[in-house]
Image 1 (tube, rainbow, N blue to C red):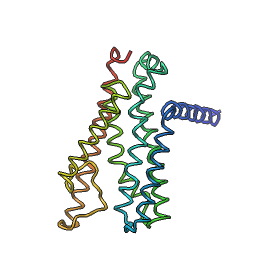
Image 2: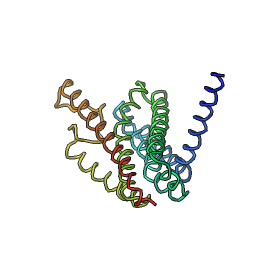
Image 3: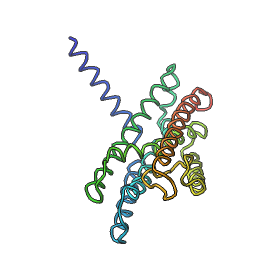
Image 4: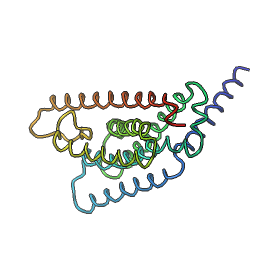
Length: 238
């Protein structure tokens, strides 16, 4: 009887995962996935044929942009997809259910994106330059997940996929410009941990990386919780 209950719960969990994956990654996600893979292949081929020396630093930059594309669609258009499919009325009809649903969905989004980043890292480690794929994917999730959580937070304010996409593009441009100003600082959102400057010691560089990751982790938590709190404003969504 107990095994039957465990089996039923696992089946229910699998059905819930499959349904939410269908909702999250339906529609245009295949185009973002295709674009990210195409960009990854293009940049990889350019590096190979141009004779540029391949290192963990170049591979980090090679995988970062596809990762941002992968997390862009599900976090930017998630709220709008719920509205278009008339799911959001159901979510707001059950007390606190929307928090559980979106927390579960974001965890699924992060998991799927991490697995794809890991797959790209494994391929690069095999085909381009030997390194530890898990550590590479781990370092990549900080900027990728931060931008994803920020996109979710902004989407709960704008409540429109196209509008959120425009804001996120502007935010991305701002972070890129800021990155040039604070290139080797802990405040650089897109800091490359594998590219240590010549004018800094290894100990100091490790400290910069540690502080940068702490800042991004706090940013992920705050924007994630901020997005969930914005979902309390039922009248703005229905």
